[in-house]
Length: 95
Figure 1 (cartoon, rainbow, N blue to C red):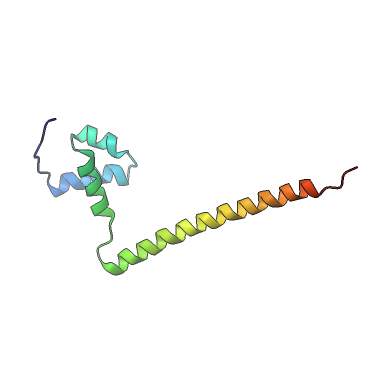
Figure 2 (cartoon, helix red, strand yellow):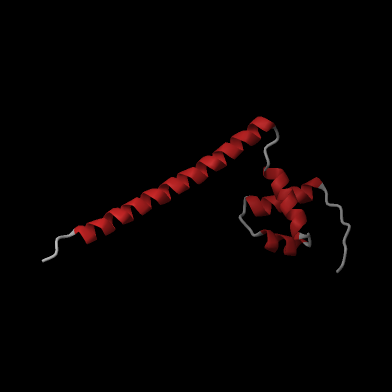
């Protein structure tokens, strides 16, 4: 295994993060193209997308939780609809 102790400047890191975040490219693809390790690129992306202060961070956590709960509610509603339809099938009078 080759160990590269490369130091990348902030401009290089920002452009690599931009390729992942804004252009939607996979971290593995970008790291391979740029010759950067995947863990390093993941750290850069995480650092660039993390909120700076505690209030902003908490707000981001709450937004993520809200999104998760909305998805769970939607799944529960879909399940209820399916169950209602299945009950209607079983309750039909037999001839």
